Structures are given as C-alpha cells and as structure tokens.
Image 1 (cartoon, helix red, strand yellow):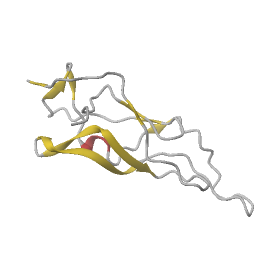
Image 2 (image 1 turned 90 degrees about the vertical axis):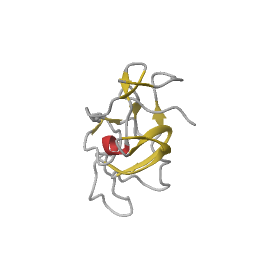
Image 3 (image 1 turned 180 degrees about the vertical axis):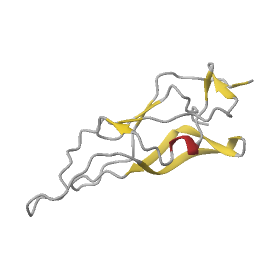
Length: 124
C-alpha cells in the first residue's frame, strides 16, 4: 500500500500552487503524530495559492484563455481498505484536477510532494 497522506503533506498544482486544506479534527488516526487526510479534507478545497498560471479570460484570438488554479475539483487515490469514520484515507497515489484553465496540452494530474516518509500508523 502506498504511504498515506498526513496534515504535513504538501500538495501542489502543476504550476506550483499550494493546496491549503484543514484536516478533520474528528480523525483520530495519526502517522508520526500527524492526522491522516481523507478525501473530504481536499475535495473542494477552495484555497490554492501561488499558482503561476496567469489570469487572462478574454485574450485576443487565437490565444486561448487561461486562469490560475483556485479549487480542487476531482480527486482519486484513496485507500479502499484503510478508512477512518467510514471515509477513505488519501495515499501518495493521489491524483486530482483543479478548476485552472491552461493552454493545450492539458497538464498532468496534481503532483504530490510530501515532507516525510512514514511507515507506521498510530491511533489515539
């Protein structure tokens, strides 16, 4: 199973925008003292800051419109076997899309950067 994501995991869009999320305080499962992240913590996150895609929704033709990433729209990459309060825990296999508009070709799913490599879980 891939490593699980914790509140210390740093998730960014393909253009260096950092996704800010708040872990559910009801989640008691921790890794190295940090709460694990479930899909609801990231899905619909409305705080992506620092995306380098410029905002230009009405450029002159033939230039396509662009818009920075602001919200997480769809996520995949949760554990079907590891659940907390009935919610699937997110893993390092996370794939996501945002509401950003970039010129073709389409960017890859959101890359994941995590600060720590963990190998054990604890509950409180």
